[in-house]
Length: 405
Picture 1 (tube, rainbow, N blue to C red):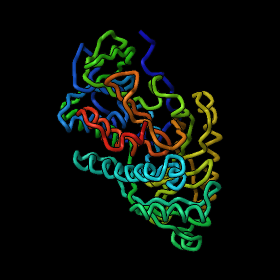
Picture 2 (spheres, rainbow, N blue to C red; picture 1 turned 45 degrees about the vertical axis):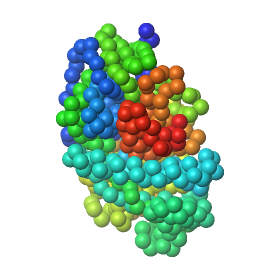
Picture 3 (spheres, rainbow, N blue to C red; picture 1 turned 120 degrees about the horizontal axis):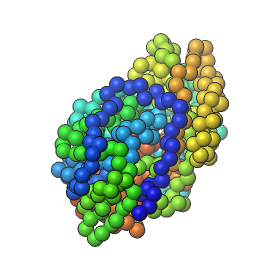
Picture 4 (spheres, rainbow, N blue to C red; picture 1 turned 30 degrees about the horizontal axis):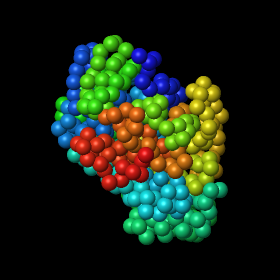
C-alpha cells in the first residue's frame, strides 16, 4: 500500500475572500463502511462537485471521497473569472495543435460556460452568478495588431468577439492601451458557493460524500476499481474519477503540466462608482499578466504575478510582496481610487504547454479517469470534464475527448 494515491500538497496560503462566504458548508459522512457504487469520485472541490452532479443527473450511484472537508482545497483560491478564452490565444493555439483542433477547443470552452450556467439554473444554485463581458487588453505578449487578428479569427468561427482600437477602448472604458478584444459569453461567480451548491444538489439525487478519508491505494480490475482508505475501508466502484486538482495522480504524464504558483488580492468594499464601465472582466495579453473582476459585495479582485514556484513555503513567503505588486498595478490601471487590500492569498495551480487541461482515462489504470485543469479556465474546464466523464461512465466517447489528452 502506498502512503497516498495522490500527492498531498498545501494547496493555498493566506485567506481567500471566498472563505467568509455564507452557504459553503456541505454535510457529509465521517464514518465509512465497505461500500459499492457505480462511480467513485476522489475530490470534493468544484470539479468533483460538478462531476458528481452531472453523473447523478443520469441516475448513477455516486460516492465522493476527500481527505479534506468539502470545498476547502483549491476551490477557495480560485478567482472565478468564467471565460471561454483560453490562456493561449486562438491564433497561437492553431499554430501549436492545428486550426481544426484549436477551433474546436475554443468552441467547447464557450459551450462549457453555457453548461455551467444551465447546471446552476436547473438546480437553483445560488452563487452570485453574473453574466459579464471580458476585455483582453494589449500587453507585452500581444499588441493591437495581434489582438485585431485574434478577434477576427474568433469572429470567423462564430465566437462573439470584436476588436477595440486605442481610441474606442479609452472612450468606452477609460483604459490607456493600444487596443483590446471585447468578448461576450463570460461570467463571474462565487466558486465556493457554486461547488457547495452543486454538491448539495448531487446529494439530493442520491450522491454520498465521505470526509475526511484519504485514498491510500487503488486496485484496478477489468470491471471494477477498489479504493482503499486510511481507515482500511474499501469502496468498490465500476468506475473511479480522480478530481483531485493539483494533488494529481502520479500516472498523469509529467510532460502534460508544470506546477506553479499564483497570487490574488481583494480590496475593501468600494462605492459602486469606483468601478470601470460595465464591470466587465479585464485581463492582459502580458507575461506576467494581470486580471481583475468585481465581486458581488463591491470589491475588486485582482490576480496574477504567476511564478515557477511549487513549494508552498516559498509561495506563501512571497505573498506580502506579490500582494503589494498587484495593488500597485491595479492603482496604475485604475488611478484615483482609494484602494486597500482586505484579503491576500496564494494558490498552487497547473500550467500546460497549450493552456488546455488533461481530462482523460488513465492509460495504466483501467476504469479510471483523471482531471487536471490548467491555466486560467479551471472552472470552465470542470464543466467540460463533467460532460466527458458522463459520456465515459455510460460507455460513450465524447466527440471532443481527443482535445484533452
